[in-house]
Image 1 (cartoon, helix red, strand yellow):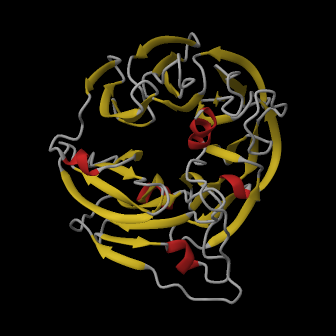
Image 2 (cartoon, rainbow, N blue to C red):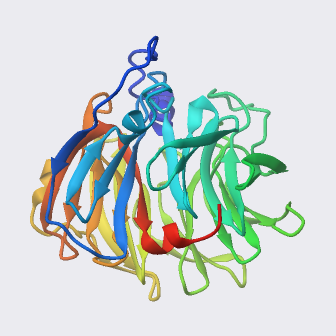
Length: 389
């Protein structure tokens, strides 16, 4: 049971079959399209959705929703790149747009896939072992790496690092050692904040954020937070928000507020948090909190006001349709309309579902996705007009 708990953490729970899929001959894949919702013309053109796929199955895929056509397209990567393997690789772990390029972190394929943000056509890739999450600053991408193999081992010896990637050349130009199994990463001014997890090392979890000075690209400080850190994101009030997975026994998952001026935790939200997104002063989160006592999950969809640091609601879905969601796996909020997108991994081994809720929390539409839908990146006019590569 203890091993399975950790395997689930890294999408190893659906470790039911190891197989790969590749093209022996060049094939042309026709993308599947559905009309969902109503056309909408704003500065947000659409969004990409990265489906993680099961570890060992080589099934990471990319979908796209066009707001102007209200059209959802599955496996856009396969259609845009007929001369490369249909699947993007093994476990899609993060997705972001910077300048005119789309970056997908493909964890166990040890690469960051780089595509044109307009067309999803491949531009190149950056080889980084066991890569996890990324952020950008002044022409560089910063990518967290576990560095070592996928291995549950309390005596794991390989510290993780952050890779600095030149976005013009797609070359790794420097690395900075941090803690064990670093996950989420955020940039604020000239500093990087890295959530060290130690997730492979039960019971020896990491508990600190690493602080990296971008001018020297060295780790300058550690900020104590909690066991097994996961995501880290900044608000507009000089605060970082960090969630942890806990140890699945005595230490629960929680959400923490870190003051950037003092580099100390100043508030704790007493609720489990699996993932979250910040839009304005609202932090939207979901949690799938497992109890070993009851062997059941408690699922919550909440909002925290980042200015007051108080929970506004534990029910951002207001019409009862949350009962349709089997296993929430991601949340993202439209920056203009405040529509809320929630992904559902369902059984982890078959296609998932994407749900679109209004800002009031009522279901607008849902659509079938690839396996384990997780990460959303909005494509905006401001983004594609940037001159940064």
